[in-house]
Length: 472
Image (cartoon, rainbow, N blue to C red; front, side, top):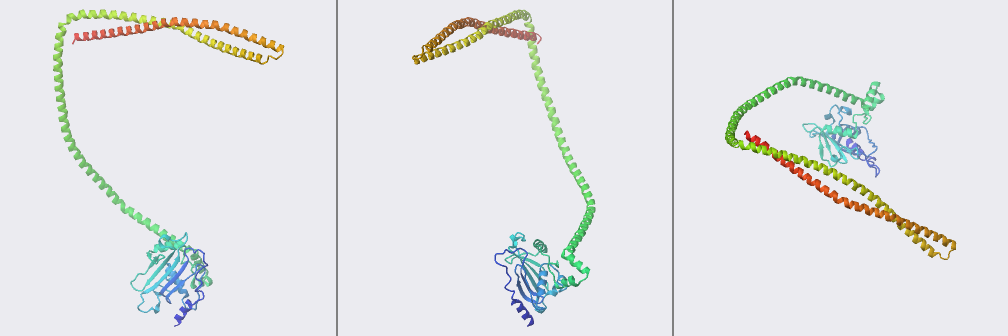
């Protein structure tokens, strides 16, 4: 009855309605939302919902306040000795549950919101850690549940990763300070306070971690050394076996190559000898035909030997005659080219003089036109200013007389220029046919020279072939 009364005091606490924060304030990850225990220490079943800031749990002695803290420690990975309530987990199971009790269950629900949440895509905005304490052969370990209560993992590594991600330090006395640790801190010796300091700053845990890492490294190095020492003979043996295997493979390959080479050698020798025989037969046939042909040519050459001498003399005479004609044609070509060059010189001079005269004629014509325009302008001004003074009239008359004299002079200059142009044109027209005739003569001479050269080459080739025919 007393225990039931204590439980009712906890449920009827005036703090029970203060388990929420003000509306609109975003909760962070790693905050304890609910603690649930079943058959744990003095509680048969208890669920405590906490607010997001500071929570006060009060009650009489023995009502189970420390049990809630112990449940939090055990559920988040601490050992039974760390709670200072039992030596092992089975001692934490409720004694009054009777013989039918199979064990205890502890569950802690944490908020998992914000950017620092632990795998929010898997667990959602809440993550629950459940630990079972079995008295028999049942499961005795951890479970990680998502926001809907579905089991996601049973690995202690995932629990440690979650605690590290959310920065929850269960064994740190600054984070979780129970009565025994508080007594050591207040009334303990200097050694106890230093131990409290090392736990609070995690120096003790880091020292253990570094020591374990060092031991692990030494063990791994020793294992690696032993493995290397054990592997060296095996590696050497493998190398020898590989060399022997390669040698056997090479031997088989060489035997196959030798057999193939022998076969190829036989066929190659046969093909070579066959080709030699065929070449000898072809050469023999060719030499036979050539011999018959040479005999016929020799007979024909002996018959025509007498007539060939007369023909050779005739060809040599024609060759000399054509050579003289070729030299004469080359000389004529050179003379004609020189005459053409001499005829082109006065033509070029006349063309340059003609261009100069034409330029002067153009300048004279432009001056004549300019004088006419000025004369007409002066006449127009005189007619427009008839009412002017007599002196102005005389000045205009003198200007008109000057302009007319300039006009007469320009006409006198134009006439000899035109005559000179006509004369040059006449000379050019007279020399042009002569130049064209000379150019035609040069081309004809070149054609004659080429014809003579062609005849000489043909005679030389005929002469050479006749000489060769004489001797077969």
